Image 1 (tube, rainbow over the protein chains, first blue to last red):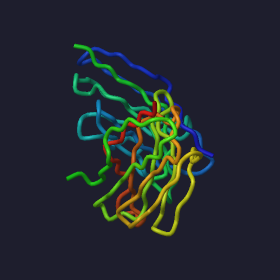
Image 2 (spheres, rainbow over the protein chains, first blue to last red):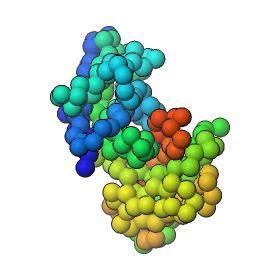
Image 3 (cartoon, chains in turn orange, red):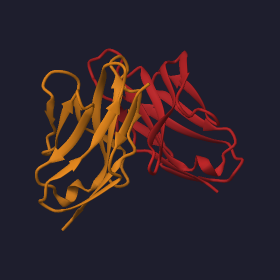
Length: 114
Length: 114
C-alpha cells in the first residue's frame, strides 16, 4: 500500500520570501512522484513530476522539488514567492504502470501575503 | 476547449435524489477516473476505467456507480444522495501507452447535498 503525508496544512509567507512545502511518502514498490497545484476555483494542474534520473526537478514558474529516496521525501521549494502562487498544492504518487491512479496527500494551502 | 470537461460545474440537490455527473475528454486517453476532494483529506479515488468494458472500484466507491458510455465519456452517479457526499468531484484521464506520464484533470463539479 502507498500513502502520502503533507506535513503542513497551511503555510503563510510574505511575498518574495522563500518557501518549502513538505511531502513524505510510503511505498513498498517504486513510484512516480507529482506535485499538482489548484488555484482558487480551478481544477488541478501538474506542477512538476519525478519519474527517474536527476533527483532535482524544476517547473517553468520557478518551483523545484527534490526526490530523496532514503528519506522518502519529495519537498517542494521556491526561493522567492509571488502573490500569484497563492493556491493549494497536492503531493501525489502513482505506480509505474498507472499514472492516473494517484494517492494524494492532504494538501497544503500556500498563502502569500503582500 | 478544455481537454477534460465536466458538467455541471455546480449542483445543489436534495437528500435522496439521484444525480449524475458527466465527464468527457478529447485527449484520446483510454483511462478515466473519478476523484472526490474534501478539505483536509486531499483527493480520493472513487472509480476508474481502463476502457469501455473495464470498470474498477477505488478507495471510496460505496454510494456511487459509474458508466463508461464511450472512450471519451465517463459518468458518475449518486443513486440516492446524502449530505456527506457534499464535495468537489474531479474527473481525470491518463494515457496507457506511457507517452504522457501524468493525469489530466477537469475543472471539477461542486456538489452540495441538502
